[in-house]
Length: 466
Image 1 (cartoon, helix red, strand yellow):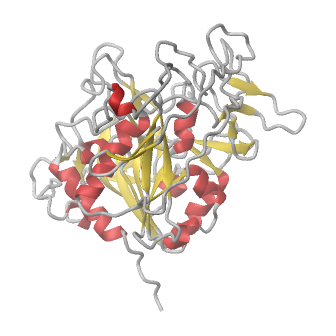
Image 2: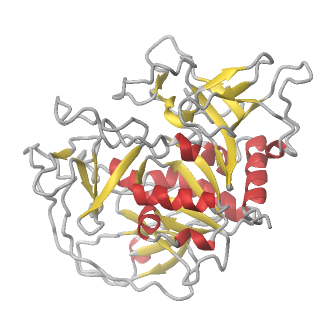
Image 3: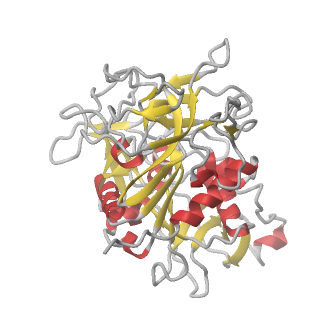
């Protein structure tokens, strides 16, 4: 096993001696689907322990598993197995984990939450040369909620798969943070779920990339953090779309979603959708926390050249005198010019994006209506109305493709929405999954500057008034 730390560069930190291995097959899919595996069952692989050295820095670590079927002698590097680098993070025979500090908040008051529940929902348990397609989306397993079990689709966290999301969203942004002198500490979704005091040591929580699946405890802990003047930056989208229920001693979760099983939907409406009113949903719109929702945004139906075929118009700038735009020189049209667009020329919008219900005032400025649960103080700083940009089927789809129900009272077009509000602490939302990619790869200088402004302002809580 080789261990690497994600930082300014992917750095090798340790390599073990050869460990004995044994073939251990996957559990069969309950529907008997040939070549697939069960996404709901613990694969029961025997554990291999590796004590984390005391001198390892907090961070996200990648482990590479190297197999040698022959009688091994010497380290893997002598057998011609190349070291991983920034371009080869993605792939099979890899896993990642988080190292947290013994004393939270000592190194940094910024906490980076790795969206691990979403990763597990999409993990297909594939291997090289074999697509098992065992996930919450491909051949899921639905339990009816009898005999004390929770109703919904179930996935086990104890399944292999490989590294995809970490390479796409997290690695470039983590590298950017370290290059620019922003020390951060890290946690997983499970850490936030289990520890109600975790956020007490921090002033800013970062949600990065694709952050779709949240437990009630996660949400309650973040909402309390905001009430107590903690700040949150959602550099993410499709955020807090589904509620999950941890089971099996927190090694699996269940969510009553609208994903089909075979040719049927086992249960509609999907009662673990946050925004739907009870009893058809949770009745707690994610807008009340994030300011935005996927139901007012959309996703890009990818073509072969994704993300190159996505719209590259960027966000229309609003309120250019706001501190978020300091140092960018961007204009909002108030002086009679054509408004500038943040991230123009990059695939900033998508691949999934969130929005708020809005209306244009007499001056052409988009303002949140609050009809969908968005806080009254939410200020729209950038907006991109989602309109089809191709004549073929490659275009933005509104909301969730399996969720056609909409609130009849909301009549505004769907729009990717960047903005913020203050309610104790300050909450910023980028409204798009790909903000960390554009910033991390420095594809747009204005997006980079906005991110700097954001981190510099929100990395410290506003002192309580006396």
